[in-house]
Figure: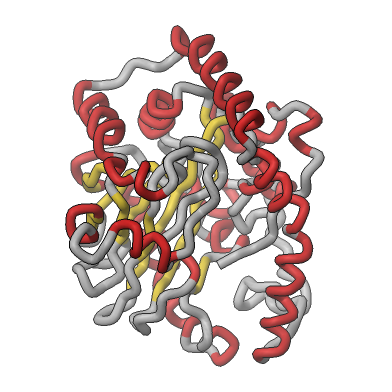
Length: 358
């Protein structure tokens, strides 16, 4: 897209001050210290702070509230229909595949989006940083090492790529509503074979309908942690309504059955530069636990500004203040996609953000 060139030129108003508690070099904050007890206490704190959002999600699963939310979004889509941007023939084909299969696999080369070379170079450098961080004792227990706010500020081309006009056009046509951009995550997954965090079957809860765009920064074969997704044909067997409670992994596997798993699951392998676009709110998905090679991948999150569950959004490590400073130098459409919370009615801002992290 060509908005920016370097961290300080890219985000001239962003906060580049060191992270608190002497963690600037690693770009991490350590409010609970180290050790198993401290990790347990941190998890307990996350769950305690997330109680209001979890209760609100339960309320939204009630039949009458689910119907009200669905009807409201349907009316909003109908009103926004004349405003949907036109798509090229190639992007329209991607959209049809998404609507039919819940996922489509392409590549950076095939997409040919502006800013790709800078994004890929930045993600490669960040992969090296995350791999080194994984070798530090305080990260040895982690099944996934994720980028910090400072990492994203150091490599602005990563966030910028997800705001490309063609990507926003595709997402808006899929959602049928104005786009909210939750920014990128960079996941570095060591080949330890553990089933934990995003490696367990789950659905995302940011909205009733949403897209994640994964970009593989390393080659990903069947044993290297590929993205996997359950085909939409199996939705009813797994609970039906979008707002149904998320099934534990064992129950999901029981309902599909050992013979059905091969038919139900799409495993998305590919070389470095492979792009996976997936509906992750309606469809169960996971990163298969890598056992052969470590996997590095970017994940970009998109949902609508009409989400009924904004308290499950804001997964980016960037603070609201940092995001606002970044947005201040962007064109209007990109600015509004980043600052999507400003479009929420006041009553949707009452429930605090869910704090549970992978």
